[in-house]
Length: 459
Ligand code: ADP
Image (cartoon, rainbow, N blue to C red; front, side):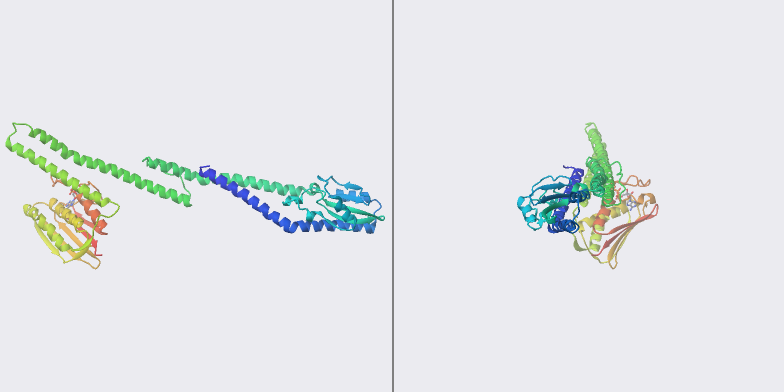
C-alpha cells in the first residue's frame, strides 16, 4: 500500500502478528524446557497417589472409584494382566499407546508419555488428546497387576476462567486493532491537510489558513508551513506590484518618446520646436537608461550570494571624489557645501558604496532649493564609522519615513514636483548598507531639512 495510512495499518498488524509469533515461540520453548517435565511429574504424582490408594485401601468397587476420578476431570485407561483395557471418562482422540509401553508398566515400570512424547513440536502437545500422551503406573488389586494410564481431560478442565481469559485476549486484539485504525486516521489527518495545502501553494494559490491546532511536531510543521505560505504570499504580492511599477515607469517615457518622435516627423516643424522635442526624447531616453541601470543594480543586490567584493579603502577619499563629480551641480544651484571628513579606512565594496554616496548627495541636491546648504561629515567611532549627509531642503513628512526604502516609493513635494526620479535610489542605499552589515538613519523635518546617517561597522 502506498498511502501512509495503509503503511501504518500494515506495520501495526505486522507488529501484532510478529509479537504473537515471538510470544508463542518463547512460551513454546518454556513449555519444552520446563513445563513439559513438570506437567508429567505432577500427573505422575496423581497417578501414583491413585495407585497407592487402591493398594492400601482396596476399594470394593474399583470401577466405581475410577468412574469418580473420571468425573472429576481425568481420562483413565486401565489394562489388566490379560491385556484387557477399560476406559473411564471421555474417549481419547487417538488410541496410539504402544503394547510395549503397556508391558513395561505391567512389569512394574513407570510410563512418562507426557514428558517423552517427541512427535509434538509445539506446546500444543500439552493439549494433545492421545493415549500415548499420558502417564502410566502399575498397581495391584486383589492380587492382580494392572497398568493405569491417565491424563487430565482438557475439555473438562477448560473451565469458564479459561474461556474468559481467551475471550479477553481476542477482545484486546480487536480493540487494539480498532484503536490503531482511529489513532492512525487522527495522526495522518493533518498530514493529508498539509499535503493538500502544499499542493495549493504549488499552484500559487496562497489563500486559506490551515485548520491544525495541535502542539506536537506536526502542529509545529503546520505553523512553519503557515508562516512560509504567508511569506510566499507577501513575496508574490510584492513581485506583482514590482512588475506593475516597473511596467508603469517604463511605459510613460516610452509613450513620450513615441509621441515626440511622431511630432518630429512633421517636415514643416520650426527648428526651435524640433530642438525642444529632440531634447525631450533625449532626456526620456536617459531616464530609461538610468532606470534600467538602477534595476540591474538592485537585481544584483537581491542575489542569494552577496555580490560584494570587499577591500580596505579610504572612505574620506571616496567621499571627496563623489563630491568632486557633482560639484558642477552644486555650482549650478548655487549651493554651499561644508565637509568635515576624518581620515578613515573601511572594509567594503567601494563600487557599491560609491552608489550610496552618489544617491544621497544627488537627493540632497535635488530636494533642496537654490542657494541651500549641504553638510557632509565623516566620523570614526570605536567600532563603526558614520557618514552624515545633511541638507536644509524640503524635508520629508513623518508618514512617508517608513516607506522610503520601498522600491518605486516617491514623495510628492509640492515645491519640487518637477524633480525627476525613479524612487529606486533609497532602496539601493538601504540594500547596499544592509549587505555591509550597516544601518541607515533618517532624521527629517518637513520644510526644515533632512539628515541621512549611514553607520557602517569597521570590521
Ligand atoms: P527618487 O528617485 O525619487 O529620488 P529615492 O528613492 O532616492 O527616489 O527617494 C525616495 C523619495 O524620498 C524621493 O521621492 C523624495 O521624495 C524623498 N527624499 C529622498 N531624499 C530626500 C531629501 N534629501 N530631502 C527630501 N526628500 C528626500
